[in-house]
Amino acid sequence: MTTETTTAPLVLSTIEDGVALLTWNRPERNNAWTVELEGAYFDLLEQCTANPAVRAIVVTGAGKSFCPGLDAKALDGISNGIDTKPHERRPMTLPTAIPKPIIAAINGACAGVGLIQALACDLRFVASTARLSTAFSRRGIMAEHGVAWLLPRVVGWGNAVDLLYSGRVIGSEEALAMGLVNRVIEPSDLLPAALQYARELATWASPTAVGYMKEQLLHAQTQTLEEARQEALGLWRGTLRVHPDFREGVRSFIERREPSFAPWAPK
Image (cartoon, rainbow, N blue to C red):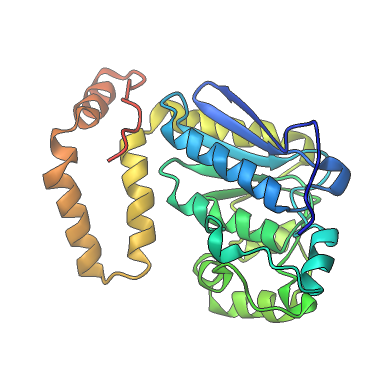
């Protein structure tokens, strides 16, 4: 993969009201994916995990696109034998392991690895004008980076087969109908809506509760119902029944006020 030289940050980062806004910043290339962009993004996600000021994360793209997939120059290099050693890098599914809610604000084209990153987020808000595609079959490659696991769990088996085999482009309303995205929003309102949702999570949801829920949801994909029930019991008896957030959640509800929850504390 080609090495990128730039003076501008590849990912912009701001933190306000408990929400980190991460913006992929290659608008001149429509935020096409590179190893360098990947590294900068994953570094920031890990920093958000460690930062008690961050309670929710919004991810979007600068300019008119979210991420249309791997940069064409890099893709050409790989097709000619360049090895980018994906097995030696952090997994492309890293966002699923971040113990804080991540909302993808899909502002434009979203395909290939861009779609994988959207699927690795917890929620997906999409601009009404955006277009989405898996694209892998049309590039002659497999369903990469675990998308064969992620996609059926979001849209169901039949829709996943359709999107993966055909690689066809779909619009926002079809994406909503099949459950690929959570909300369709007018382009000018997309980022404000995603940020407002994230602020509500940062204000009203216990970071500890959400962190454990995210872990539970991931575990539940390969658990039996009884195993999921036992995991919840273990969290209750071992951690949450004596956690300050439980008492604060109850007191704030009774007193009809905003809660004051503690930051996420790494286990």
